[in-house]
Amino acid sequence: MPTEAAPLRQLDPHTVDELTHTARKILTHFGSSAARPELLRRVAESATRLGEAIRHHCRPVDTDDGLFVLRGLPVDDDGNGPTPAGWATAGDSAAEWDVILLLLATAMGHPIAWEGQQEGRFVHNIVPAPGHEEEQTGASSTVLLSPHTEDAFHPGRAHLLLLACMRNHDAVATTAASVRKVRLDADDVALLSRPVLPILPDDAYAEARSFAGEPPKVSVLWQTESGPTLRYDPAYTPLDRAPADYRAAYDRLTAELERVSVAVVLEPGDVLVVDNDQVVHGRVPFEPRYDGTDRWLKRASVRVPGRRSRPLSEADEHGYGQAALVAHP
Image 1 (cartoon, rainbow, N blue to C red):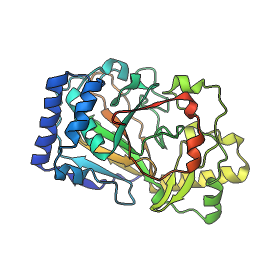
Image 2: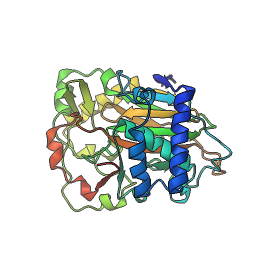
Image 3: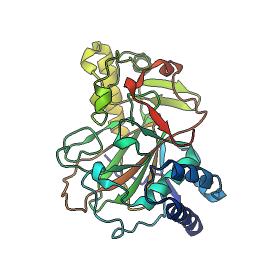
Image 4: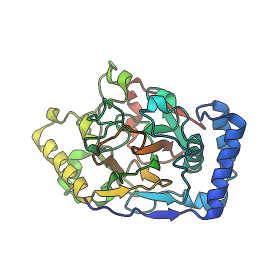
């Protein structure tokens, strides 16, 4: 898998100052917790006053790569403190970055959170956690985190995913593969466009995994005016239930995604923006030290109002009882 530089949008010093000053002003008024409703309201108000340069940098993904990196924001490695031992102990670590990420997310759309994940927080801390090394979740480390659509099980999943790098001393790569770059024949596309199998909730959603409703069958691929899109999570797709021809088509899609996959090594201060309908993402394995210096990302999820990139049939899905919380409905 080649290590490649993602399309880059370099923030100028004035834009950086505007974002950091706005975030610090919000924190001064509302305290450190980015989960407070009054802070979220101020973020929404402040985002409307952000300058044109920031809005230009936050424009939609505009290449077949399906992603880009915002670069130029500073990270205070010492001031942020040690990498948390898990999301539950992270609290308000690096709170200024929570607000910066929410400002960027709000400039792109509506930040969302999940009642059943990380206590409904709108910014998640992604860190390796003891005992979770081999899971297919963001808390894992020693296994390949398989390429996947974020929250693929849910019809209300994010359109955009923002990953901000707080610490990455070991240059651990995020993997990404765009469906716009794969080559599949028409028969495979037709098979994978049919709703044959469900995508089940991942291990981060304990309550959803025990939901009693019938799992809805979903399409893996579909076409939009701007090109093909996908909904893909092989680790939570019961492929053994599918006919042989469907499994073979799914395997060919997997092989194509592997062929076009790139490794993006984020630097502290980088914000990777991924189109969740176009790109599957994952992470290469690494050995955690659990000494406060491990890889640390922050994640925000964004819905884009009015975006038509998904089958209308998704509106009938139950979402395994999970409700998305919208910061600025």
